[in-house]
Length: 608
Image 1: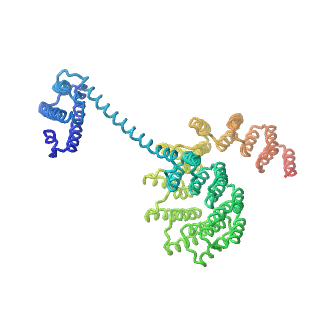
Image 2: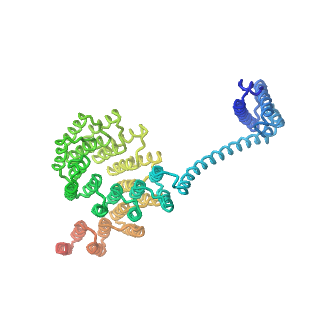
Image 3: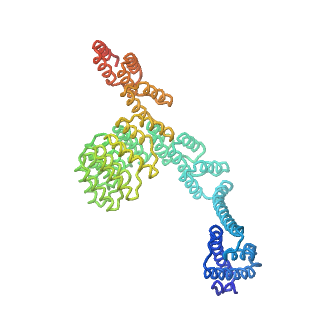
């Protein structure tokens, strides 16, 4: 009862006693933490509290000590708490003596801290065990299903396999399916469709093909959705021929393609520029399936997009007018395609007219709509209007994304307005939007191309301050900036830094360094870089050989230059007339016009 009164509780029930115990333990632990800190402070600094404070603290400790002893006595039998040794008279008395300036026993303070740390570790262990138990419970559910599949209905089968596929746990999903089939329970076609779709999305087409073959042999038979997922998987990896083969074999398995099948194939063919083949396929499908609507929104949008991107603006507009005449309900995606078509043909006024028409119809533009308009404006060099669009986006609740800023920053850099592009990057930072690596690269490259090495390096330092790791494009931009400023040694150092940071130099890295070395007549350094490039399994291109030829010509090594020229001609590299011009110009400069004429005749009569 004294325990309850000390805590301000009036109930005498068992549950109230438990709450009281917890509250008193919490209060006592808080007191211990405070006392331990004070003990350590006195131990290390020998500071003495004022007498009034010390008296008050002793009084508080005595009260807590007495109450806690009474609590232990009242609830010992009921709760079996065996912790009273931790707060023994000896330890408390030692603490008091230490506070009063006595010699004190520092071991007591550390004993209290050890007890506190042990309590924390015990609680962490309990938390880990609880987390482990939760994971084990989930695994047990799957194990139970695998051991007793008949106890679960098909809806639950589908849910579990679907969830595993969505979480990327394809191995577990396939294992569950195999175990169920071993026990005579065959998952339905929906479950198999989830598996096929997940396999295709992860690029595991061989396994998806094997699974569909099993479905044909053992059941359940694949349906149209199965083939749609399979066909789309091949289209994603740009194997349209295989996708068309699957489409043609659907009929032999008794599966009728639907509108989705047609749209998948039409979209894939348009992406490859096979616009006429896509139209022919659509006509054939419509002839074979009279139940298909000839003017479907998705199909028409795909064809319209293909026409615009293929330069067939008139045909693209014809699809749009056909939808309009048949009063097809258009959506934001269709308008985005139309606006992009006008922007591609640099008809920015028509693009804005379509944008206005979109608003009149009650459609809400999305970020893709605004990004398309930004692209059109930046191509025209109208950055003032582009900046206005960017500010309007934020006001109407369509937040600009990284692509929005990339479009306008790239346009500014291409037109030489690198400082303005830098202001947009700073605006992103001010609004807690960390630019991705390629946006920093745009600025570094922009400053480098205009010979402003100091600002290029400044952007690189700011990039590091936000923990943005440089990639090969970052280093290539910096290498180019150093070379343009005549600092070849620092460009070489950047190549070494790349290797140390596990960023492999690419063909562009080596070509820039080889070209810079050759321009300075350092042919030995250029050949060293060339050999290093071969060791790193980079295949030299026409630019590599052209730069080496230039280096040999600068040093007067005409024999080596001609040998390289012959090697280029015998190789399968696509050759232009730049290497020939380098040799002819050099021969003319050293007073050997006959040599230059012979080279020109051989080039003119070569096999093409």
